[in-house]
Image: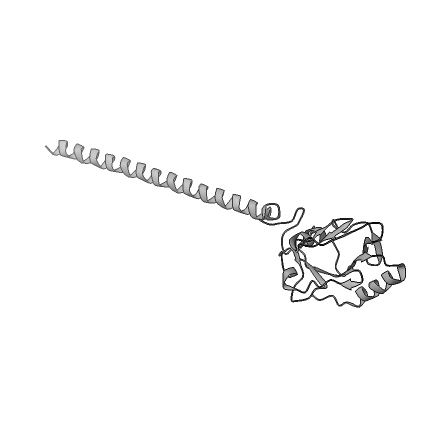
Length: 198
């Protein structure tokens, strides 16, 4: 009887040890699977964050990461000699990427690389082309036989500004009318006198 009970005890002990080993192996495999899943999620999240500028909702085409740059430009828009007022609430901070702010209608703030002036006007629902300046209410100021839409960047005439990514301190004039060079020079002097706020 002693030998038989001893064999039964050894079998129970071996069975228990085998069962414990199987349980430990099962828990270890579950832990490895969970940790692998966590590492995969973290890896995908890091990749997505690194490529945020391409997939961020509302990001302008070609823009870098929001906040990777903060530069300022001064802008003056003259229509038949009258200055357009971008300090009105309808034109303030329409996008985090590029905007007018703080009830100032002359300093443009750009908060990312690659953001164009064309995108600024899109956010304000102003249609700006090389030939026309069209307000949200439908008023059009287009180049014709009598009047022309002109663009100047740092006193230099340019054919278009829609694709312009301005640099810090640039001064931009948009003028519509039939001004002569003396009148344009007066508008450029007014632009030069505008402070660039930071």
